[in-house]
Length: 61
Image (tube, rainbow, N blue to C red; front, side, top):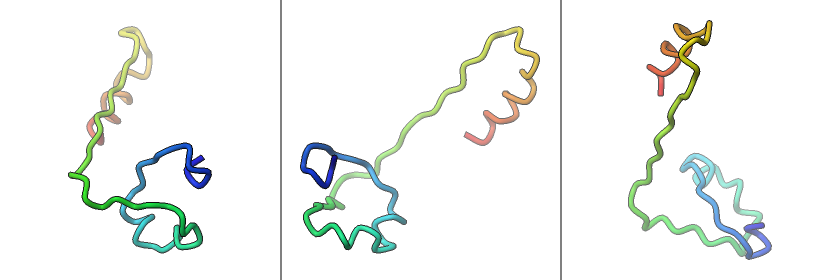
């Protein structure tokens, strides 16, 4: 969709730096944006039998 000029996307810096986008000369890469971030949450039922594993996994987020 981006190459068809009907969309936008966020790309990791490694994808931009690797040169894989060079074959798409019509793409505009705006590096002037401020650093972006996102938040990831975990939702689970209180009676989930994997609660300990879920909580352990949440420490890596």
